[in-house]
Image (cartoon, rainbow, N blue to C red):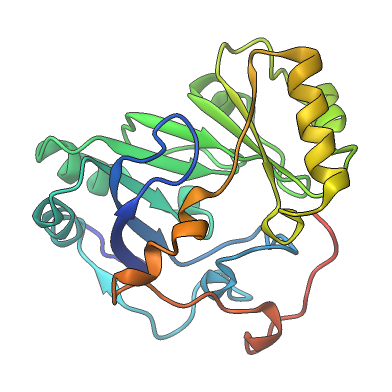
Length: 230
């Protein structure tokens, strides 16, 4: 089994989507080629996707830590976790009867058996067809009032049967234009569109686990430049 580069892991609960409110153990991996301008996990970034010095843990070690937490589900996230081979980690988790959830932009083939896939598309790393076919739910990050109609034209959101969550980008969570665009779209179109929110941030629940890393602003990342809008 190959060790994985781990940015953080912690016990919290899922604050988004269909499984909102469930006790969840999060495994956040290093590495992301996407670099969204509003990223709240920019500490996972690096010009070559991985820092030279990073904590690396074996899949069975991560799975045992997750199992010991007593969680209901395990969420593998990043960064962009699908740049890594997740086969061994998923196997070890499922071997302990832990449902494996993946959060991905969908631009890279998924290696490993997942129980639930959340696809959050990004303009600078568009989803590939095989990931779209595996998606259990979509999460659209709404930065501007015209984002939802643009995504609805670009992706077959209404053809997969998966719910489509519309989340205001966190810095716009009180922006009336952004919130109003979500409100109106859901009222006008109904299913599969659903209004969403990052409820865990209101509770600040992630920070209660000492293993959780503080949010790092882009300007505080050595060697990084703030990218353009994604």
